[in-house]
Image 1 (cartoon, rainbow, N blue to C red):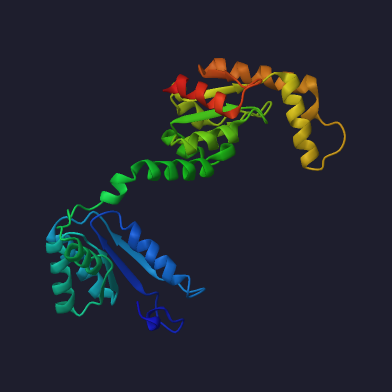
Image 2: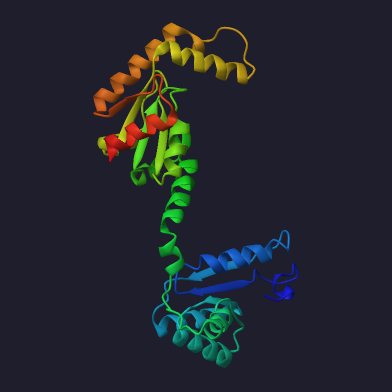
Length: 275
């Protein structure tokens, strides 16, 4: 990608077309790494993924040609890669091959023909990618955020403040579970999205009131709050817990009591209930 293509003097945002037999993630990573060297500059990425047919190559190159874009490709199939290079030259489209040269060199050096199967890296490391996706999901749906995404959750944890929702979700995400959580607030109507979730995937968290009081006092001290507040009032805490349990029973949610349990123990119990 030439420097003039991302100059601030360009009349429009440069167009980069990624053509890949997989999802194009490798090319995106390379492009973002290069762009980091050009602060405050942008390019418009167009990803053409899962390319298996020659027509997809031709259509992608036509789009790039129409806007004067550059094509970055990560094709592992020799025939498709050869077609792309030849057609790009005929159209006058700049193409940059991120895979072909290395694949050909390794084939010669190792004396072994490549498998030419797109997406093999992701298949081999699917467990890793599943965990990354679960962690990203957990961060996006922590503390009641984005309830429209709850249908994707494999487990939704609900409970009053300091019952362990976020650390449990984080632990479950590392194990590969898409986990969201929602805080039950006294006298606040639960969101309609909670009505639409399969109750078998929702876990209500409970905790001994006195233990919850200790956790909340620690939290209040950490925040620099001094003195008595409803948040650390034992009667209010008992009321909150009773109200939350009524909600769990109303909606048919399974419950996990986190009293004297570690995060690992709580997560194991949750998995047994939803597994």
